[in-house]
Image (cartoon, rainbow, N blue to C red; front, side, top):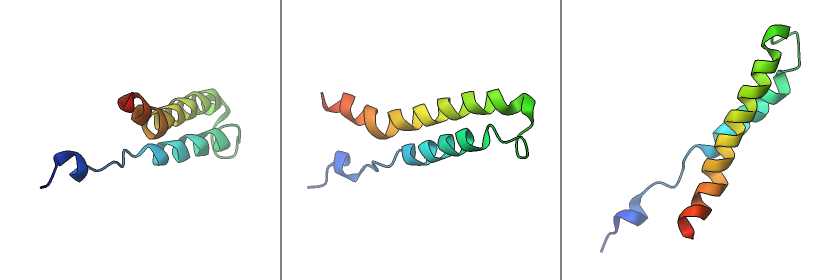
Length: 66
């Protein structure tokens, strides 16, 4: 018997968001790539995207199990 729970994809894209957030944090302070006026915004967006990816990858599954 096939259950819909087993057929669902568990890939939420969280790992890709973590990588994207880390890349934004790396390129944020480099003035050659990002203008100085955008540097703070790049850091903030990198933290938000990385935090969202961390939640999707690690924390959301633990809250469902409890």
